[in-house]
Amino acid sequence: MLANGIDGFRQMKQEAEDYGLVVSTKAGKAAAELNDSLTRLSGAFRGLKNKLSEYLLQPLANAFNSLSS
Image 1 (tube, rainbow, N blue to C red):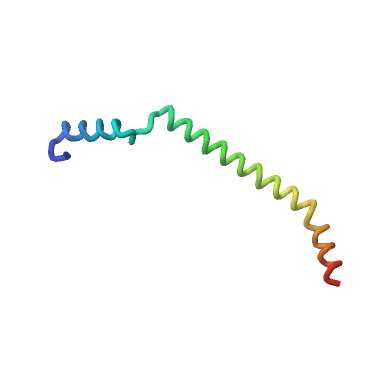
Image 2: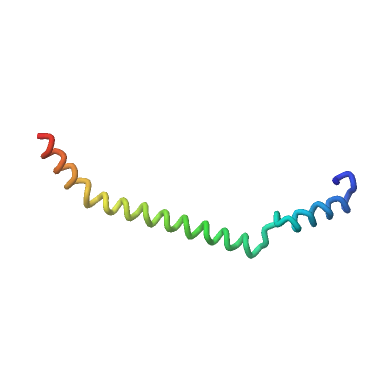
């Protein structure tokens, strides 16, 4: 198709669009927003895990030390 020059390129572009291989700008922006939201959510869960760890680590360590003594 590339041997056909610009017409071959246009045909390849049209085929890609026909087969749904081209992502619209709107879909691309939505995917980027979703990715950003997932990144923030992941960070929030990491923060929650860290805060819970602050409160639970010492009591758990004390409990396990008591059990092993």
